[in-house]
Amino acid sequence: MPSKSSTLPGAADPTAHPGRPGPWRAAAASALAAAAGAAGLYLGGWPAAAAVVVAVGLAGVRPATAARPGHTGGHRVRSADGARLTEPVVAGWHLQLGDTQRTSHQSRRALEARIVALGQQLESVLNLHVTTSAAAPLTEDLMGRHHAIVDELLRHSRSAARLRLDTVSAARAMLEALDALNTLAREVQTISRATHLLALNASVEATRAGERGGGFAVVAQEVRQLAAQSRQAGIRIARQVGQMQAPLDAIMQRSGREDIDPDAPEADCATLTEEQARRLVRAIAGEVGDVRRDARGLHEECLQLQSQLMLLRGDLKELDRSRPGVDSLLQDMQRLRQCLLGAEDPAAGSAEDWLARLRADIDAGQREHARQASL
Image (tube, rainbow, N blue to C red; front, side, top):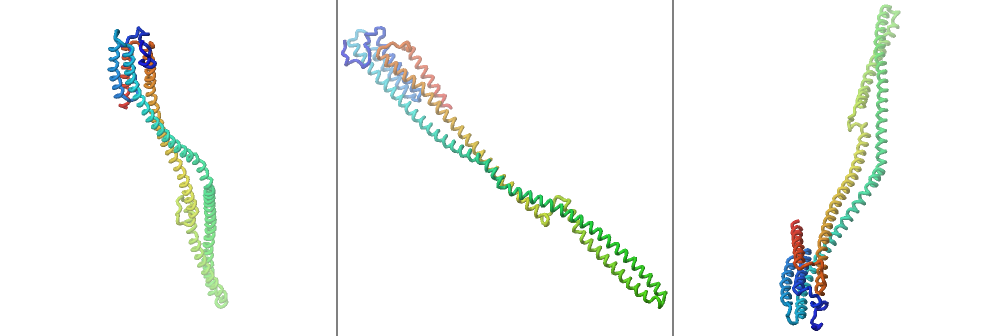
């Protein structure tokens, strides 16, 4: 019985398991080293994984030849070779776990950067949301602040309309009065002409009467002069009535047209109300433009936020892809421990099956890595 000091801690005596020859133990150790390489492939360490698989595979040949039956001190040799095999396997696992740690750190830093960017985007979205939400009260406040202008605008419009109606009514009444005055002037002229003819007839009759008609002739002369003055007064009245009718006719013509001369005095109220209306429309248009710009900025921020979320989702998928490799690595470490303890491993099957499965895993990892690199 060999001394316990030369036995690998935790390793079982191979004589206690006659059904498991030394070559199977070495092949199992080599297969588990390949499993460590497969786990590393999932995590991105392809060159290191291949080196570990080759190194440990070559080392696994030695215990198979050293464990032939009849060899003296076989238990000591197999224990020493097992320790020698375990060292590169564990070193390979350490390398792959280091790759896993680096990948995890990189993913963590990427996630932290994404989270910071998302926080900034969310803050911008919230600020824009607050601005957009405040736009509605601002619009209402705008209408409230300009309510007085609207009332003033309507008041001036109503005043202008009433002024126009009053002006048209007054002009119409004045035209009617002037027409009547013009008629009276024509009647005065007619009476003056008739009076002049009557005075002429009276003068003729006074001349025929001789001395007895001398006083009557003087009266006839005075009547003729009064008739002439009346005719001249009628002419002047008709001329003045015509001069007064001309501007009134112009007012009546303007009241019937929609385009009013802005230089005309009566168009001042219309010009004032139009300018107020333009100021109000410009103010409302400015507020609406601000709301539209805020809404457009909110849409752009949401698109950027969506892009950041897609990148974050990709980082999470990358972390999920590393989990199977880590799980496989942990399972193979436990399997190696059980094999070194001499326990049966029904899940492993034969060494050839185990190696075939690990090679399939490695090939699948290589294909997945190539696919991810091509994206």
